[in-house]
Length: 518
Image 1: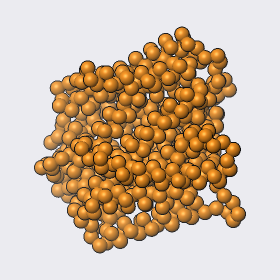
Image 2: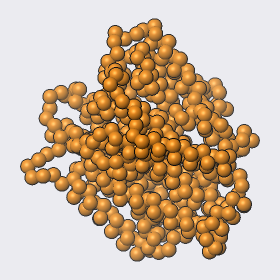
Image 3: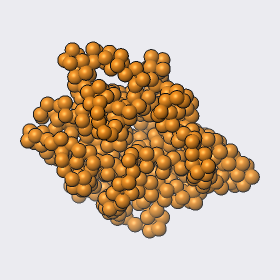
């Protein structure tokens, strides 16, 4: 599929406009220079609407848009559990975890681990996160983004990757998190409205011009198996979404690790001016998560009827873009690129934050704030360069890059959740117990993958979490620390009435969705 001249004009206008907006946001007062709080945490002054929009923009990228649309084509609405369960996870993170992080005034997740445990735990997890962000997340987003540009615009994937890297650097390198977060508002608006319009066109096409309600009714009538939220063991996709485990098992562990303890996600909330603003931003993001399946999964399901002969499920979203009229196709393409570059900018900013604040500043203490910001900018460039070099060798042989991400991060996710949850809410959790959980997570995951290959990935995560929980408790009781370094006393977990009302609304909406599509 090629883009018409008008589409390219619209896309180019978007690129230029975004860069101009980023430079304007990043502009400093005369004689001033950014310190580490300005660059890495947006001066701790982000409002709720910027936090919520930026959380979603950092989360939604090529692997979500193209991958989840492809899963909608192959599996159906059941894949929406990743989005809908995340909404509840965000509420729990906002109520019980954010107050602890903000009370301790941290920049990074490893920094909290040092305060709670010791430098060994911090360094171990910092190095792990740096490796994952550079060699898994960053490479996957670049690779899938390059393939998406090749599919939609006909540009070679390598040139597409280079364009994405340069684009993300151009608007985020100078301004840091502030430039990323505020431009994310534009990105999310474009993503949501562009995605909703594509869903409208998809349903209207299915109904042959009779409207979206008729189109939705036709889909549910012709594809009843695609509108089942809980898959039975007989379903050929059961290993990907193993029945009730989606609601009761490993998906919770994966969600808490991603939304609660993942630097490039939680960093937006850490940059809030206060806890109330952070929690309002979390609620805003949770409501947007409820909407995401309509934007990314529904077009994939509609593609089963409109394009039933696709050779690969991941072709669903690019194929559906062909429905867009000239001009609007450029807008949808801009929305897709917006999601990709936002995720790239978020990841590189978090990579530079962890490296500069948790590794470099410990090796070279006492340097000026300006020096640390300069090092952070260098790390952004270096991480993108590494990702560009290794993306094709690492991911070129995988049929699904999303599977590569899950398999690698899933080895460590259970241990991370154990370390943070016990560290926050069990005073006897010790440093050696935390290290045991981190190492045990990788070891147990690899052993289960080798000796119990039939165990679904999501169930394996749940089993390893329980094993790591037991391991951490045993080691902590036998090898206790001298004293708890982070105390929960004085941390207020009481939330505002508006937060509580929003949480109940989200819970009721989710309950209704699962009851209807059970």
